[in-house]
Length: 245
Figure: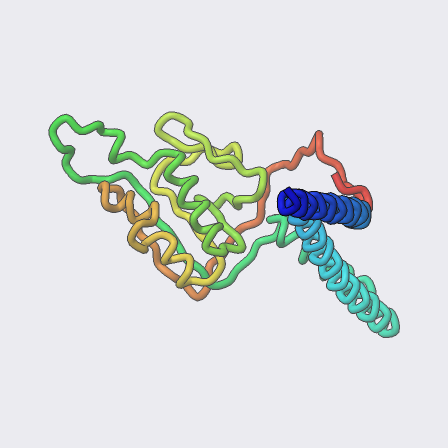
């Protein structure tokens, strides 16, 4: 009986100690949770992304500040020489060139695209050997991706508002109608531009495999005319730098 009472007493003490340890643990966890918050991993990534964007913006503003200081210095230098007007005209010409409002020249590539002349396979759709507007558009886009700085199509300067639409057996470019052959000129890295048309797997190479005539030759001097059609903007407006959309 005495041994049984001692065993029960030990179990009672162990139970009390366990309760005390549990109580202290609960108090510690309660204090810890009040000092530290659990932050979801997605929220951390969102903050990280925001910081990265802000860093890029700060770097961009820093570069703009350097460019602006350089422009101010040039204006002051030219002002001292009495040549401010020529400097402003030069800057205006640079913007016009980028917008497509000035004729340009430089190294690049000349692409000739026309209908295929091979015999049709029995049952084949004759449209397979015709140049369509989507073919011309894909070639132009491939040249842009390859770094073309200026492009013309049958003498029409391609700018941001230029359209290339099908008009029966012809194609409408900048509201002007042209028939094949289509001559595409592009200024840029000649090797890159030529590879964008002739390399295996490109859209131009695919058209050639189908049977259309596709040729791309490099040149040390390609002439690109200016955009001559009227420009009408009815909806867009200039956004102030501190008023981002």
